[in-house]
Image (cartoon, rainbow, N blue to C red; front, side, top):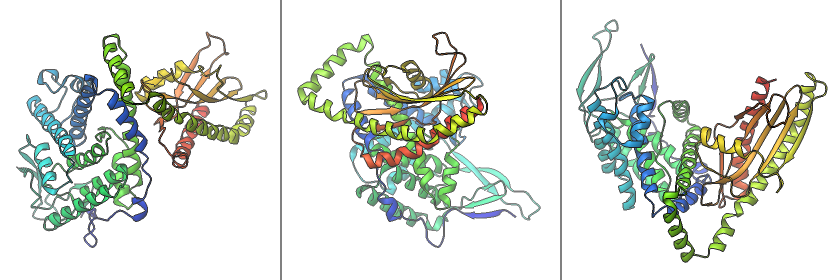
Length: 495
């Protein structure tokens, strides 16, 4: 007999947000403002629409791939994102389903995300009718789904059969999957309508009361998944609803990559009452796509786009006091100085102990803690640009003021742990990034010395001129600790 796990609690139904969680600071406000500024600067360019189309195509591919509706080769995935959903772009062996079926499903899912953008533009509250419409759009090309027929006795195994798929209608039979000997029970069909009415009412209340979008998206996604109101396609609808929240907040659709390792564990933590990992994951994904968005601005500076740049700058200068705007944007550098001092304090806390450890291997080991000056600000530019492009997928603007702090450790080798702070995007829109790395020199500081440079943070730290100092410090400290942990681990591997 399978172990039964009740995902939806029959005694309480879906849980409301805790009052403490509702007042959680909005860590994405800076991203929203900077993205709005960047979008405004690109509004006369085709690049913005092209970026949004690629973003929506990526969402369309990944949301179905995660549910294993189809499999797609990674190379073909990139091609489809860049060129659109065309059957001739999917070569033989690139998918496990008929090509026409895959293309039709992709187009359905693309139509669904476009529908969300249109719905957001109308600025109307979310409704259960629209949730049903989303479901029908997402599953438009799918006509059947799997169902389980239990054996007449415990000895007779269950059988899987195909049954007609209900589109845009609440489920009529329980959908309690059995995975690895565990049966997961969701909301029973008789209570789906009332629970969905309550879910949407609460979501609209939270939205109008200013709940941060990462909090609201995580709550709505998880509580919807607990109800599991449809016969099939619930995961895709859950991600569509989270995307609605983010798009309504002026951010990016929620793209969960098919190989995202943190997604299922975060949902399981939410099942046990802890929504924080899911909130953190959603926020990290928003910051990741904001970094990718910064690359659009660099394309503007290609020679063929020079006229558009000049016209945009002329329009902006005519519409506002440019000097006042620049002064406002540059307040972010004062914030970076405070974060840099935090890094220096952390380095000082560990420097002596690190040297003692290294001296056990090489008695002459020593260290040096340094930070940038106006004359040395250009140090590490090549590494910063390389890591930004290849590891974090964003454009590092090195034309603006940059600063860094570096801890050099010398024993039989030489290592530098570097935390650089630099501007993001061009034109500068008041956002900065810290993307740390560790590098090892095999011989000396000579120009021909072999250097191995490795990023040490899974996620680059992004901040904005509108961030509040206290909230920024609270967000920076745990990120800094994880980055330092990764640096020490990398150092241990290279002793």
